[in-house]
Image (cartoon, rainbow, N blue to C red):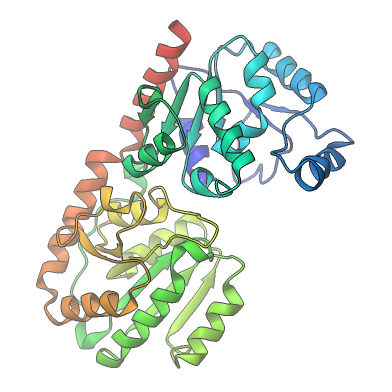
Length: 365
């Protein structure tokens, strides 16, 4: 994930070493200090036993624990940062056995998915008791982790950091001849609310027939979304752009007038922390039309830097878009406020300094 790569490579006061089971996309994400701990031969069978037979959360084997501890020792590691709560649940035997402090960070989906299963919930609570510090990306995630049984004093808010110099503010002009350009970017999955986006855009397009919508990203919902666009008779003005590079995404930001991100809670409990693409769009000067969901209201102030509506309420989203497009003078102000909000609360430089402080404090205890 790009935001994790940005975080690791921006550290200066500590020396990060990455431990992983395999390496992919080395050309896109160059990094030298990587230790590969390969998956054991019986890994697949053990996972089946835990999930299908024992009906309890899978966890690392003694052999895997020894291999990871060896990599930690060779790296002279003083602290272990485990990204994602569900990974930390798997690593409970390692956390129990390793002598140095462990930190876990939650990012969104890893807080609520599978928590309806009593055995997984108990395992998560055990993991939270074992780690020294718990990092979350938003206030809403903080409360969710407390609800899982985490001691509040263990939790630190450590927000997503956005490299502001890569997404410089640019004021958007009000489009002539009703040529509105709307954009959403992200993985094409349920929690991104893309069906709400399409339904709202169909309603918006009846008022502004020159409008176009670009959806950038890949994911399992692509064919379903394309079918919905055809059903709504907007397939001719909706561009499914697929995967785009960071450079291409920046250009899409600067070509757009409004960014959409009407996230919703998935049927499996999957929720957002604070969406990275939304923060990048805001930094560039795009007002955001989104939902009261997860950590989004911590970044988007309703009627100030964007518009917020209830989850799945495409009519309210469309009405907000139509009302704004009919009185567009406030859009440049919204865009500037969006950019200032990200600079104040989500600067990569500031968030990196805060993470380093957490690391050094825990190492020194």
